[in-house]
Structures are given as C-alpha cells and as structure tokens.
Image (cartoon, rainbow, N blue to C red; front, top):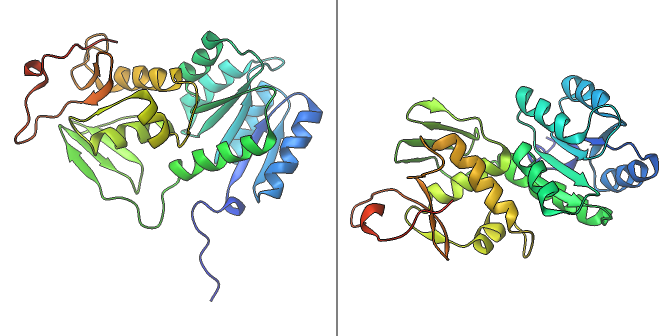
Length: 252
C-alpha cells in the first residue's frame, strides 16, 4: 500500500504566482518547482482572479504592482471569495505600504529584492500553519470561543468568524494561553515562526483580529494591549482577576 501523502507535502500543494516581470516569475517558479510545488503563473490582476477561481490554489504569491488591477485590489477581491493564504511581494519598502498590504488581508509579505530561497521558506511556513496536520491540537472552548484546529474554524458565541490563516493562528495561540502577556517579539516567533521581522506585522494582525472579535475595536475588552509590554487575551478563569482589576491600560 502506498503511504498517504502528508497534508503539508509540497507535491500536494498548488501555488498561484502573480508576477508581471517574466524573468522574476521564471526564477521563482523554478525554485518552487524544485521544492516540489505545482505552480500556476498569472501576469496581471484580472488573470490572477480568473486562475484563482478555476485552479483553487493552496497559496497565492501576489506582486503589489501589477498592470490593470494592482495587488492590493486583487487581495481584497480574493478575500471576498476564498480563504487562501496570501504572501504579498512589494518593491515599495515603506512601512505604510507594507501595512496596507497586511490590512488588506495578506498573511505575509516579502520586499524586493528578495532571495527566492527565502520566499520558498516563507511559503512552507505559511502552508505549514494553514493546513491541518494528521494529529492537530485539541479544540479550544473558552470565553465564548469554540476553536477547532482540524477544520480551522472558530465560532464566537455560536457565530462563525471569517479569519485569514495568520489571524486564525494568532487567535489560536492566544486562546490556548489566556491571561498571559506576550510581546510582539514573542508572537512573531511563536505564530509566524520568524526569529526576526517587522513587528508592525503583529500590530496589524492584532488590529484586524480586534475588528472581528471585539464589540468596539477601539476599546478592546478581549484582546488587550498591556502598555509597554505586549498583548493579552483576557479570559476570567478560576484564580485569575478580571482585567478591570489588573490596573493595566488598554491601548490600541
């Protein structure tokens, strides 16, 4: 009997590469193919949406600057129709540009010029966290949340939440560790798997997550900022104090 392929094996994963520069597209395609991925290429935004709808990729590598329809708009439209992990590639290195991509719904970003090997590692990292393993962690039920790692679904008070891959990972990490404070450095290592990186990535994902789980994201009561330290998911458990008694500031 042939062994069943592991859910995260590259050979089972299809990547949509959206890049209008043929030389870059060719190099990246070759590196991904060597790593065992199946690769489709789109040279503009409208083609990318069409290919994504028909080929159902497991991950999209999306250039920020595209003819016809730019990467930010492609990302927005993809988020309306499918929950596919997106890595945005940008030649614009400003923090505002990176944050725009993340706020639009990208799970990760890479800045040009980049190493194709690094990009392949980022692809593997995102897929590893977005595709269930054979033996996933057990479900979590806490503070009105019901999270199932096997199906990568989460309910809040019985209502399903539409989360990106990284938002799900971040929420899952925090739900398993209620009332503990984590710095942005802690979170980027634990959730993103990076030893170093742009900490604004964490800030943006926290903001996006608050918009989906908080009644008033401007004054969060679940995902709190501990001033000068980091973030904490507040859940009142036996032997713990409510956040209102902790004397800590909630700052966005």
